[in-house]
Image 1 (cartoon, one colour):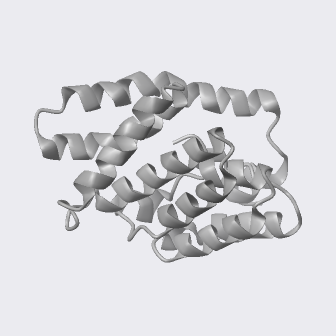
Image 2: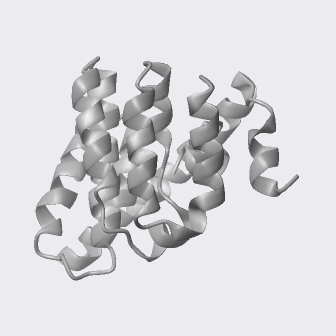
Image 3: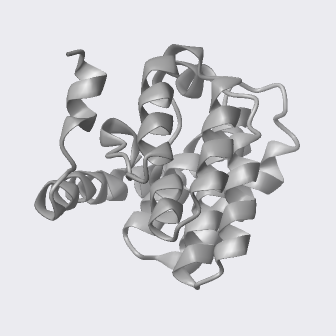
Length: 185
C-alpha cells in the first residue's frame, strides 16, 4: 500500500483531526505576523493568502474576511506573479469557510468553485490545494460540488493524481476523505 492510500485507509479520529488543527493554529500567529511585518504592497500580497487562512484558524473571522478580500483586490495587480494562484485559491477558500460559518452553504459552494478556478502556482502545482472547505462541504452533503472542485484541481495539480483519484473514489462511495496533509493549510 502506498503512502497516500495508507493515509486514507482508516478515518481520522476526532482526536487526530483536533491534533492536525492544533498544528495549524500553532502556526497561525507567525502567518499573521508576516502580514503585519509587510513593508511593501508586494510583501503584503505574498503574506495575505497564509494570513487569511491563519486568521480563520484563530477564529478571527472579520480579520480573515478583510485579509481574503485584500488578497483578491491586490491579485488584479499581480496577475503575472507566482503568488497569484495562491492568492485566489486561499482567498476564495477562506470566504467559503466564512460563508459556511454563517450557514450560507450555496455561497460556500460558489467560493469553492472560485477557489478551484485558480491557474495554480508553484506551491499548488506541487503540494496541492487546501481541502478544508471541501471537507466542510462534504459534511454538509455537497459531494457533487466537491467532486467538481477535485476535477478543477486536476488542471493545475498534475502531481496530485493519486490523491485526487483516492478522494474521488471515497466520495463516490459516500465517505469523507481524511485529506490528511491537505486540510488545515
